[in-house]
Amino acid sequence: MLLAASVLLWGCTAEVEPVTFTAPVVEFPDENESLATVSVGEPATFTAEIVSGNGLTTGWYVDGVLESSGSTLTYTWDAPGEYVVRFEASNGAGSVEKEYNVSVTDRLEIFISSESEYEVGESVDFYEDSFMRLYAVVVEGSNVQHEWKVDGEVKCTEAYFNTYELELGAATHTVSYRGWNSVGEIEKEFTANVVERPLTVSFSEEATTIAGLEGLTVSITATVDYGATGIEHSWKVDDAEVSTTNEFSHKFNEAGDYEISYYGVNAKGEEVNRTWAVVVSTREEFLLDDFESGEKGIFVTQNGAKVGIEANPFPSEKNSSAYVLAARGDSGSGYFGFTESVVSAMGINIDDWDGIKVDMYIPSDVAKFYPVMDAKTSGSNYVYANGFDKETGEPYEWDTWVTLEYDIDFAGMKQLQPRPFVNANGGSAGKKGGVVYYDNFYLYKNN
Image (cartoon, rainbow, N blue to C red):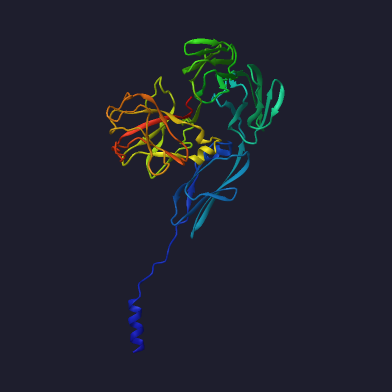
């Protein structure tokens, strides 16, 4: 039985053919020999042509490091020196090796660049009151050393030159560059022209609206920061010129709205314009906020009302402010408010004042508009704008900026709420998409 089993097992075993290798035969093109000398940054391609041989393991090595396992090697050296490139092919029947000694020589190619010009020619311009910024761009080469001179004096030994500070005023400098490595050196000399910056003027009065009583004197200084060569100044009150220096000073003896305008022009024809609105009153007034900061300032949004600062959608001679406060009546009276404690923090005793003055833009497509202030003394204490007629809407013009005044008894008041969308009975009358705009909130004292 054992003999029968052995015969059976022997009869089920598959025949195994032994693996037979063919010795590798490799040919190397003559072009490989031409790569005995190459330059830094120059790709070199070595080729091995496999004539015969199966199951080969192949590899190209550069100084003993495997760089390719295929039949070709493309290699770029980044430093000069002597290197050994070796090819190996092997299997169970034999192996083939081939070595090449490669001498890598350096190169040197450099150009000069600046922030304003990709490749500097005979001259380059820089703004005054800045740093001269120049770059030595090494296109080819290694171990490059650098030297920058300004007017014959060495100022930098790095590729990036950014340490030379240029003073105010036009000037001319001679800049020379030298870069070198083992191959040789490259020199470049050019002119650096220091030019004036564009005309820039700053003003001692930053507010766009200036308010005061009759007899108010407004003084503003224009300081020319850059571009002062040949500068001419002109100050006007409305259309009348009052000064041709950088100093403005004018006394406003009568109540009214005025405009101060500044115009400056230099020898290059560069211009600067600036305007201020002046509000002169027969009574004492205090500007609470004009929203030019882009913030709601002392005003707070309440109960999710859609109130926020927006760019003035309707600038005009009546109100040229950049920013205004928009109150929307989508689902209510569109109210917002400020508290007595916030005003007190500004150093103001609210009880000393007699009312609120505010500019408003009232589009004609809003819901019926009642310009209400809720003084919040005890419950609701609605105050309508002086002279307002609920039946006719007088004295308003729609779709334009108007100035409203509210005489308010501030005694005991802890909060004031403008409520643009309140109906005649005191209920909310907001309209989807309805919006009115507020600007320039003033406290005032009656005479």
